[in-house]
Length: 569
Image 1 (cartoon, rainbow, N blue to C red):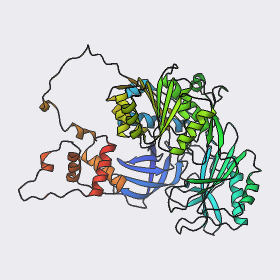
Image 2: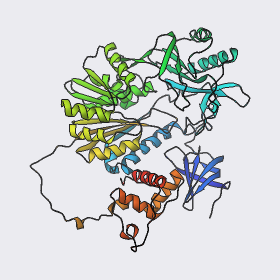
Image 3: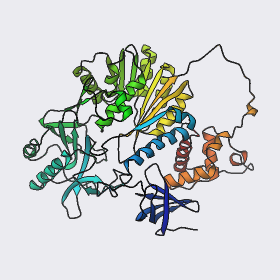
Image 4: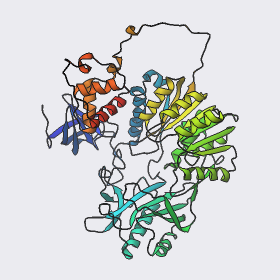
């Protein structure tokens, strides 16, 4: 059957995609339905048709899944923040655990039998709401010109008015409504993205869960906030208020924060304490934590700090457990931020070195070390892929343990290469993207390491995002047990790489992710460019006068992305 836009279809949802969308099929044709969950029977309207699949909008739930729950937020379908709030929490955890496992299997190449042996149960939360210690709210106007704040609707910059997000701290509502009242009273204009006019762009709120300290930072399209004293007077009466500041961002950009902050009232930073968790509590699911071994952190408006402090304590305690420190080891913490993991490790290690590209974060890390009287941690500013090789090769600093917590894109190739050269006994890899985690683990395990332990940690309930932590151990080489084998090249199937994805699978991937149609010829050209052996009839001219069309740059980029996705390059 041929489907068209606006067709209505009835679907049984039997799977979920990586972005939390429900998946249903009719005679092998796949439909992706946002807001549908596994087990639903739904009526959906087709919005976009592709070759072999289509995107559809949920119109009616005919039979609700047993996995479905009533969302606490009335805006959950419009807002892009909580993609799977309609899924009960137990099933959310199962979805995330499977997401990590499947990526390690499909992208990393780790057998399911090994993953079943190495992977420990996902760590969830007793109360998966009001967990975020930080939120950034855009400010704008509604269709009537009224000043509003809230969150962007999914894949847009249209603001959904909401001052009471169920993922944020309860104080957010009072703070946001106070700022909106102030702006209306003194006729302070919100920023209009299209024109670049107006003053107030965003409102940043942070809270220290252990200390109760609250920070408010108003992001301005200007140097000064008129009647700032009146805003301070309104906000400083809120229990826990510790720091009120402005941030200056006059660039026409999607970047929220500028580089300059100025404190209006209180301190420049707030503090929070991360405690060490007993592993017995983590394994049993207990939420309470021991009072000892707490590390105090100063947090500025520009600091990176994990947004879920309850789960952060579990994640970092798990990282310390995976590291297996005895008090004598040299530890490298790569992409160290303000030193959160570094200082945890320093409590149990001989020496810790941290590297981070953001200078302000390193200044904060050094100050955090002084604040906690930790003198065995040393921090460097710069790109990990540049600083780590330079220090290793120039100063010969070795590593017993390397802990790495990279951004979503994963580790740079130079970083991975240097880690292999340094040959630490253990590598603890903390990741916010299990796809790039799997890619990097594949390289490390092809170069002398083995997967020993892995675990998912739910840092972001109600969303599709999940944190992962993995322990790799150095394989012991046995030079006494080896044999020399001579192989002729014609014994290998040089087209074996093609088995990872067919031409049709590559075409479908490119079409789905870029909207471009590509030919077998173009795919073959790019595969050959990256060293994948191809059939002669795709690559060689049929006559001396034959001119073969060359793959355009935009299609080359799309094909390359597909080859990377299928781990062929």
